[in-house]
Length: 288
Image 1 (tube, rainbow, N blue to C red):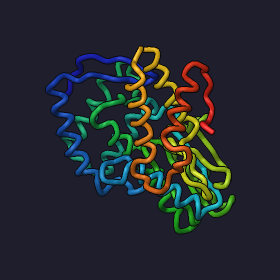
Image 2: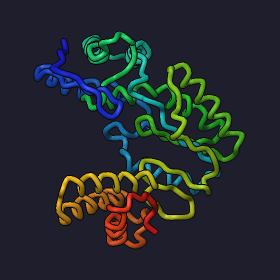
Image 3: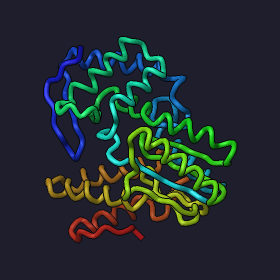
């Protein structure tokens, strides 16, 4: 039986702190549920351990952008907060989860649900990413079934995913299928985090700007996050060396796992100059 120590909201997400015994139970459950769900989860879902992670997903997207004419990118609105407990528990039952693990997930979902909404899941919990993988598995399977018939390609990292198609007609068919599945899961796409069009227009995904004829570059949103974090550090009084170290870590993240795929134009010095230039101006624009 899981027990809570406290809970709070931060940046629109519900966080909890479990009591020490419960933390141990959840760590063990993460391993057990991961093993039980390994064959159930789609290979198209890449945030799960052993599936390649964010950088493998970006590499896939860059390759597909060079092979397909159309692309759609979506993000689910309030993904964790929108998860329906009955739907998720049914998916776990369909996956054949053992009774002990099923009961633990029931506690994990219901204890923080103090308003008895029957929806929502805590962020930052040990098993939340795994349950996040499970919840959109019906979408993964639907896209897999469409792939041979419509020649589409699909990849998901948590609730952020891409659909590639050779023609507008085939992309529309995939989107109709997608919306049917999301309706069954009681989910909606985020209106401000969706993009549908040709790959030659480029698409932002997982912090990168992906274009079929160019090397990867940081997306504008990624650059803005860099600026926002740098500004907070600056206002907290960190010295220039520490600020430079933070920007260097960001630069290493940008290139990490993507050898010869990310543009080196300007290099680190251009990014560092970009940050220094905008620390006092408040502008958020691309560095050249």
